[in-house]
Length: 144
Image 1 (cartoon, rainbow, N blue to C red):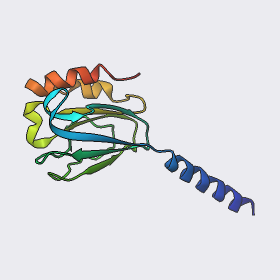
Image 2: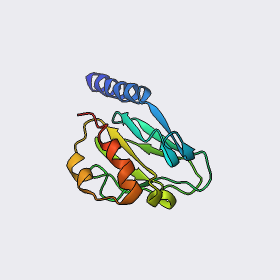
Image 3: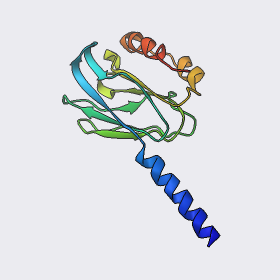
Image 4: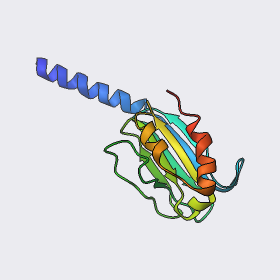
């Protein structure tokens, strides 16, 4: 009976933590508060276990991981053009993302799940042009 009680308690804890997970919506826009070709919001502070739903409200957008800007062990990802993409934050750290067709126009975002354990690695990635200009203020929003 005791092992069943432990198993039931563990199952209840797992279900409870899933029930408290939050979902954040990030819109992919042709024009937003920060100008043309933006994620809104472009910075999200979340917890491990939360999800981010990327919604291309205008045609021609997707979401893709920026190479080298993911926590260790997280697989790179790339959503389809014009389709919602849900990212589950299973690992603590920073997640740099871009819209593939509009990356050179500075369409970037930064997601923080828990502590920024990979901040040095993300900061070491060199972005150019408008992507760099838009990404720098996002890095300044990281919460230690």
